Every structure is written in C-alpha cells, then in structure tokens.
Image 1: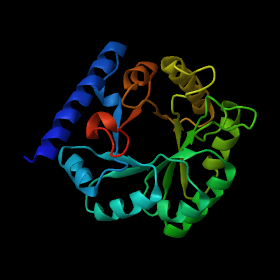
Image 2: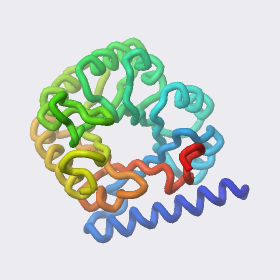
Image 3: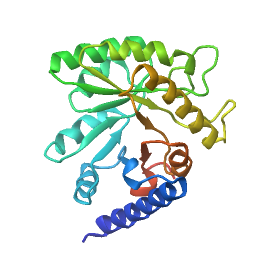
Length: 239
C-alpha cells in the first residue's frame, strides 16, 4: 500500500467511525447516511484510491477541474455530485458527468439544466440549495434560494423534463441567525424537507454537514454528508 493510499484509508476509517457513532447516538442505522467525499483540488489518482476503498459518491465544485477528472475516472463505479455555484454557461459540461447537481437555486438554472439533460438523453438529480442566511435579495452569501422560495422552485424542477427532484441541500451559514448554530440550521433544513415531501414525497434526500459538523447533520436527520478535508487532508493552498 502506498503512503497516500494508507493515509486516505486511515482517514476514511476515522470518518466512517464518526458517522457510525453519530448514527448510534441519534438512534439511526448506519445505512441511513451516505458519505460523499468532496474531491475538489485533489487529483484523479486520489479518486481512484477512494473507489478502491469502497467510496461510491464523490463531489466537485468547479467544472474546469471536475470535467477532466470525471473523464479520467469514467471506468469507475462512481456517482458524481456537483456542489458549487453553477453558471449557466457551464451547464452543458456539468450535465455530461454529474449524476446529481446539489446547487440548484434559481429558475434560469433549472431551464438550462433541463435543456441540456434532454439534449444528452440523461436524467439529472437535483437538490435545491437552501440559503439559511438569505437576505433581502432572496439569495445567500454562497448562493442558494431563500426558504420562502423552496416550494416554487421545487415545482419548477419537478415539472422540468430530464430532471429529477431529489431533495434539499444546505451549507451551515457564516452570517445571520444561524451563524455558529449548525444543529439549529440543520434542524431547520429538516423542517423544510418535511414540508417539501408533503407535495413531492420522493424528494427525500437531505445533504448537510461537512468535516467539522457532520455529527450535527446526522443528529438532525441528514441522509448525505459531504466530507473532504477529514478524508483527503488539508487542501493544497488552504494552509
């Protein structure tokens, strides 16, 4: 085993242990929570290592990095998630490899995703990114739709050809009433999910929690956690 593979395997085991412990503490089964490893800034070689270790879901946030990486790993049994703010001029490329787009936050993006999914003959899963720090503009500091806009946007996705409404996603906000209150933020997301499932029962995916706060997300009821640093180490250039 190479040094890098050993490092990733050790970190992955530790993260799996954290998720299992969080599930036990919350009275949940381990198989209720799916780990998505965020591979942004890391090479395709690391993605291959992760696949060999049993990881099946990976995430990227920049198309210019993700597209060549996904192509280099096309032979692997992976589901690719796009988690970054997505410009409409990148949609055609992203639809070429992403199984799920977790950052759907505006109608114009839904229209573009639908058009390209139909053109490519694909069905793309969509999560609505909820901005719990949304201000008067109705958008958050890192993108996202305000909670008040979830129902309308969900209906738009559900009615769009080539798209599948899978659920909701959020990032714990750095500002506003939920700043520093991750558990409260994730609890609010779960309340929004409950409301969404009344009209869209199949939209039961809830993506929340990262390396520092995955336990809070699991306790709140998240179905998917997005973990990067805790598995792959501190990213190059980030200190």
